[in-house]
Image (cartoon, rainbow, N blue to C red):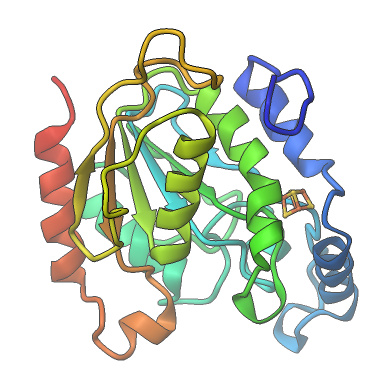
Length: 251
Ligand code: SF4
């Protein structure tokens, strides 16, 4: 059973479909639909997705990249996470880094039909609906954790989670606590390049994650324009962390 009390689908495609039909957060659902109706002038010919955005990537992934939430005119328009937020936006920054590290076949992510393929990586967001001003409420993050748990449970090879920013980092830790994982004290704090090893769940743990749950959490700054345009995060900083990630996954 998921934290929401619903029976969890076991197949990734069923989990993804279930996410797209979620209506648990009226504020976010209304906002996403309004954005899709009004549109940005540059995208007035597009039909916006305007629904919750499921994760995307390799079903056999060992690495989960966890972002914050869809962008109103990005993934909320295209229906694919980190896709369509403009040339040089967060999707392009992330995908070019993943391509340099050998995890993606393209360096851009502007259209859902662009042929992008991820290898060993699955990308999801802590919150699946675009929030006003990119700021979900804490209760909206909490509510959406059930979807993350379902998706992770349908990705049996995951070993590692890369949290893009503090909200994603804290969301992952909260999900682990819900699942019975005892966190180190003091509670680990997000930073770029931070690596946290969380071990395995104790036998008989009360949660629904498999005992092997992704045992390593890595922090990376979010690739928002606010961070990339100011030099808070650079391609070299992403490359350094992804080299570390590459060296730590098994095999
Ligand atoms: S944010 Fe998550 S829980 Fe809330 S409506 Fe969207 S998909 Fe559902």
